[in-house]
Length: 96
Image (tube, rainbow, N blue to C red; front, side):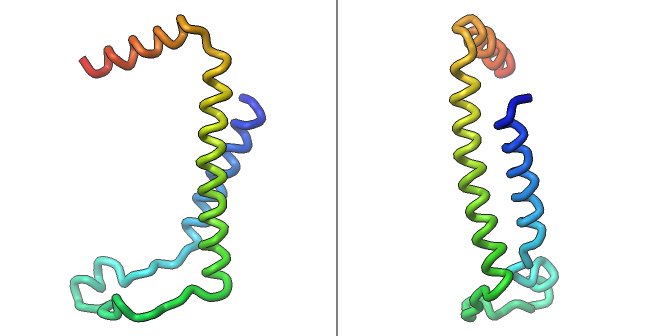
């Protein structure tokens, strides 16, 4: 396991925690059944900690995306053409 794999796992865990910290924006299924949550078009702005958590989640999601691209490029440089051929053959055999 290389250094960027560890960073990738840490960023993944941070995104999971931040997503769990976010409050629900709607009334959920119970609100849909009972008729609650009819203020769909009401202006409700995020304030304070909710806004910070939302921006942190967004920032870490962008970081996650770029780390995923970086890892795929770095992992692709070390593979030989025979490894790529074997991987392609394995993927094709899955869809037969």
